[in-house]
Length: 323
Image (cartoon, rainbow, N blue to C red; front, top):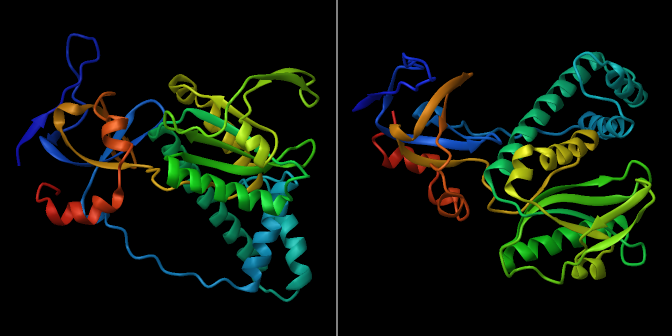
């Protein structure tokens, strides 16, 4: 296999060799960390083992309910804070008073929840930064139109239809307002040009929650179908600053709500790259490579990316270049 020595230059007289020889061309998995495209080499040893199903018992169901209630009470899932453990134990001991290993079971389940949250957070951020978004949505419901249950169901169905028929992409979460407890939806959306339904207009009114005038951009279709809403425009710089993503992560971590995704939002893509597209490298458990900003094009490489057409297994079977 041909190799090329990569020696990035740091501005001094002598270039620094960051790593050893790099394949002249190879397959990589690529994601965006919010600032740059980052790639990792694909190897046969990285093929995922088949997942095994976990049978849920009554204690698992009770734990999940108490865990969600603890989050709503403001208790945090951290290693040092034992308030959540005490809260869950107080609830479980009423139903399972003779559970001999209750403390160990609760600690193990909380640790699993903490690890799952980190994976969800990483997946959410990679989807948010790799894909393109042009609207930040806030949608609530009118009591005359919906209950909480019908609001969840109808909004998810509506967004799913818009994805299928008009090419909308979205990711977001349902959340309750801290002041009123009212359910609403926050999310990022990509709406292709010419595919907006209804009309978006500018409205200025007084916010009792903020105690000042505010400007929102309601959509007439969603206003009629659900209630108050805001279709705020987003640009690339606002996404790179991370404010919109952090805003959504705050809600997810507080409530443990499941994230709502449309189909076709990859968290990473697979591409064959020459060594000249790599700027430098760093080590984060594995060796990772920072790419030039123009290596990946959203329109060309991400917008219509379909993992089923180019799965890792397909790449490994078809490509002798993968080590």
